[in-house]
Image: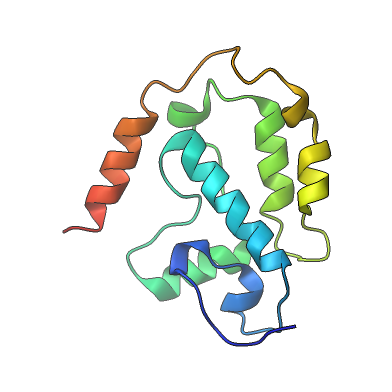
Length: 129
């Protein structure tokens, strides 16, 4: 177990924010953050103020806004809900992620999020102001 506070603010796991000892489970959380961003173009937890951001991360409360998530499968939403689990003991491991039904789907079929790149540009531009 490690205990040094480190990481990019929007990607760090709740246990790091809470300054608790942490293990590899914090990396699984980051996988969930990256997957969320790849699917919709913006992070599940965001605020300009890091203290507010950290409170959001510690709460673990995030959503799937319809404007970005309407055409994204319920299976991947379920997967994200298990990866972005506040309790590291309950958080999905890579083995559990791969075994999830979403990975069994043919990901080349189904609706695509046509505005994901635009959403990523909007989110990225927030940091330049």
